[in-house]
Length: 402
Image (cartoon, rainbow, N blue to C red; front, top):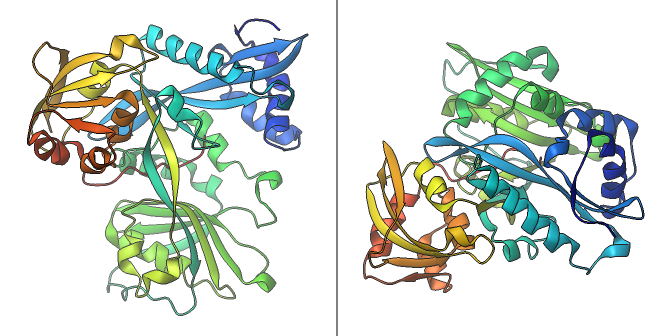
């Protein structure tokens, strides 16, 4: 078995075959053609055995919205080990090497991922930073507030016909939504691609557009199934710049003729829909993890985001894999900026890097982590000052599985 090596562009097909094997899928030429342009070979780490790929871990270079700012983040992906080579330490080798490479490159203070299993990535310092609700909605008789007299105009179309408009609105809204990743032209091509292999027996993707007084201010991407099944919209994303657009989009989605069910797998924990419908129980929200955050460079990460209230606190961090993060860090910041520097002053709070990742996007409650023994208050009232500072006006909400 060879060492961990950096992939080449020509390794893509072999890696795709490994992923299909590990995740119980079939190789599809159309899917490979779609994914090849977003593959970054210089960020893919590969292990071969006798020439055959047996383990891989890769990353995409994208920015991530965090509270009050945008941060370069390594979007970790394509992690797989062949069934024949499990429990040989390959995943550990790959993840350790990847974290070290990200840290040494000095460009990205955090790494993020969606986890295939929740028990895997905490071992490498990742914290569950953006949980989600999976909504499986019984739409029968469900009601939303009556529309306003001048609410705007709704229309349906194919997404590609409005790609530029969708991109501009998404970027406008993304600035205020921690957990949403930036999409360049390659990523919009990927997101809007409508391969039959991705439909799961449903229709082609449609876009529902809402136009207000100043133009497009909301859209929803969704599919439906044959009306004989009564399965309603399978909603992929809802992006709205105003409450009026948001409500109008959902009013239509929840009342599509000949359907009685709707699914929406990436609802935020503070999803406004939970407060809009007249019977929230019919949403059947199921809590699930989504985006995991790994703080790679503590001072850079904490300096990059903004804070809802002024904060001046010393945090003692432990990190078994990236020793540079271990130490005491003084964080001074607020809504206009922040600075995090090493210090020898007494710490008010102590935690490991995983807990810091959970707190980073503003969705986790420090008191809850303290109650679980994951955060320790060393100076009384530190949590009282820290908690409102780390929160944000919207909870984090990952928009896509990358």
